[in-house]
Structures are given as structure tokens and as C-alpha cells.
Image 1 (cartoon, each protein chain N blue to C red):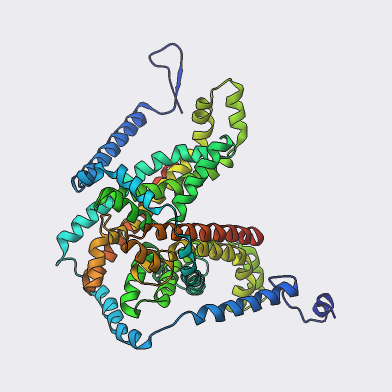
Image 2: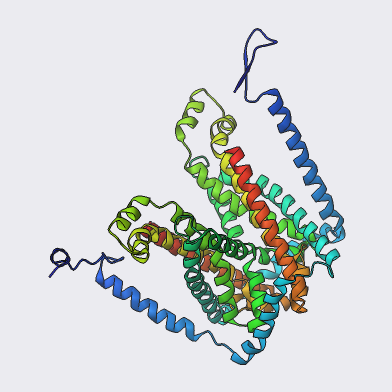
Length: 269
Length: 271
């Protein structure tokens, strides 16, 4: 009996997510096999976990009474450094990302430029900020400059990729209209492309500002400035009340920037 | 749009009124001042002597990385497999936790505004804290290893998946939901026949997208002891074995490119 006849007799069943039975069972079995294989690599030292569970509870308890006071000068300096790294890195990163984004848009750039810009984007997006930070710390020495350059480099990949996609989707009629007036390449970009992508570029930059702040909280682990160093020290010293305070500050700033950016985006779009 | 014809006989078109133009200048000035202030803060905390030879340091670094020590690759298969497992199991766990949170956070499926705000706080807290920070905490609690990495990835993914999913739930078409509740269906039946089928494609797309991001993130979790290829990376960097580091970089690049391709294919098939 097929599905149709069963349904007419009142035994209706919804359609399966994957139509072909062969694929459905193959995927299920494959998934089960993978789970067994993958879970077998997870070895847990239960004695260690029991020992650590107490620390976990201490950490949760620390959120109830965060300690902003005992390391307040370190926290203040770290947050200030994180904020200035975030802002400068976003400005520099976006400024560099715009030409690369233009170059990585298939519809307006010649192929050698296209491939060059695409590979810059791929490299920037593949490697986590912390890896780039290690390399930049080796090159530029410890301190916020290496962190700023790291965040700027990561910003390039993010903004340029999304900007390029945006340019590839733009309304071509306006470009043709401007081109029909005899405009140069520069004028086409300025008058036909830029007005179409500007609101989204501003929105993306605000979003990236938010991401950069969150990332600036970790690159301090490898010595690239910001609040990360203070956070790392407080966690390894088991000073969870200070860690909780820092994490709460980070969450508060992210919330603030989220509200701020949604306000700015509403204003520009 | 503003046409100023008070002074000239020929009307000139301008984008902004004079007041808006001035406001925009002031905003730019404030922005530039803020930028310079931040730059000063960074520059004061920088040892410029180290920066002066950055170029030669960079050339030296590349020189040490080349040629890559390809024979080292055979030690990397196991950590790479761990990295993939951290990303995949972490995504699965995170998605499983994000699923109920998203339904509690969406305005149209949340049982109570108070519960909704708790769910939103969970989403923001999870998104604000980087997976490396989660990993650092979990390594001190659970001890180093793959498990800490999996949980770190899962905790970080809740916010991302939860946020995108609850936005998808809020955008569903209310008509099927109304139709199903009109048949006298229970709350659970409305969910399973009215809401779920509408958000399933978005859910699959978001999960695969997050998996792709998690592959990247899990490559560095080992730097704080949470398993995967990051452990090898950290060891090679600490021993200044830069020719091994370049092999690890190639490996990460290849894995990320493959995962990006897989994720694009799956998203294409589901949406």
C-alpha cells in the first residue's frame, strides 16, 4: 500500500525529511558510525572532573558577588586598551577592506585582481585572531599595537567578503545609467555602487566593532594587549571573583554596543 | 532633499540642509578626535624600538617557516581528527541546547515575558564570551582534553544558533499555526505541525553555518589546553619550530576550505 492509499484510509503520516529511503538510512547509519568513532576519542578523567567540579561551583558562585575592586586599576587599564584597540582596528580595517572588497567583486574587477583579493580574504578568514596575534607579537613586540594590527587584519577578511557579496548583488541598472553618461570607472564606483552598498557597509562596520571588542578580550592571552591578559591571570590564579567581574564588564559592553549599533543602523538605513 | 534658491537665481540641488551638513561635519570631527585619542593610547603603550625592525623580523619569520617540514604532517592526523570531533560534537551539543532556548526567546512561542528575558540573557552571555575564554574556564574545571573543547564550542554556539533561530521563528507565517490550532490541536501539536516545519530549513542552514565557524574556532582551542591541533601549534611555537608551524597552517587552511565547501553545498541543498 502506498502513502496515498494509507492516507485515504485515515493513516496519514507526514512526509519524511529526506525523500529517498536509501539516503535516509545511509545518512542515519553514517551518523551513528561517526558518533561512535568520535565519542571514542573523548577520554574523560573522572577523578579530575570531580576535583574540578568544586572550582566550577566556586566560579558560578563568583558571579553572585563579582569583585571589581581588588584589581580595579588592571581592569580599568585593560578595558581602556581593549576599547582603543577595537576602535582603531575597526577604522583601519574597514578602510583597507573597502578597496579589497571592490577588488573581490566579480562583476567590477578583472580576474587577476579578483583572485588576489579573494586569497587575501581567505587567509584572513581562515586563521583565528589568536594565531595572527602570535605572529604579530613576534614581529612587532608585545603590546596593543600587535593586537590592533591583528584585529585590523581580521576585519579586512570579514568586511571585504561581505562587501564583495553585496557589490555582486547590486542593481546593475544604476551602473548602466551612470556609465551611459560617459562616467569614468571612479565616477561609476562613487555614484552608482557606493550609494547602494553604503548603508550595509555601515551596518557591517558596527557589527565588526562589536566582534572586535569581543576578540580583543582574548588576544591578550598571547601578549597582544587588552583585557585578555588580566582575565587570563585571574583565571589561572583561581581568582574567580575578578574573572566574573571582567566577564560581566565584557557582557555589558557587548550589550551596549549591540543597542548602539542597532540604533545607528536604523538611523542610516 | 533640499533646494536652496534664496541667494542664487539658479536653484542648486543639495543633498542635505545646512544644519544637517554641519551636524555631519561635527560628527566626523568627533570621530577623528576619538580615533586619534585611541591611537595615542596605543602608541604610548607600544615599544617602538621593537616595531622598527618588524620588517626584518617578518622576513626572518617567513625564512624560518620555509620550506615546511612536510614529514611532520604524519603527527597531525590524530589532532586534526580531534579538532573535527570537537567542532562537530560541540556544534551538535550546542544546537541541542540552543533549540529550546530559541523557542523560549521568540516572541510568538515564548510562554511568558519573564522567561523570554532569561532566554535572551543566556543568548547574549553566550555570544559575548569567546570560545577561548570558555575553554580556559573549562580546562580549569574539567582538566585539559577534548571534552573541555567540545563543551566550550557548545556553550559558545548556543548564543549564535539561538539568536538566528529565534529570529527565524519570529518571522514564520502565522497562518499554518492558526489553522492547526483551529483544529483543536494541543500546544505540542501546534509546535510540531505548525511551527517546526517552517523553521526546519533555517535551522539546518544555521547549524551547518555554525559548524563551519566552529571548525575555525576549534583549531585554536588547544592553545589553552582544550585538545585538537592547537596543542601541536602551541608546542611548535613554544619550541620555535617554525617549519612545523607552517605545516600546521597549511593543514588548517585545507581543512577550513574543505569545511567551507561542504557547508556551502549542504546549505545550498537545504535552503
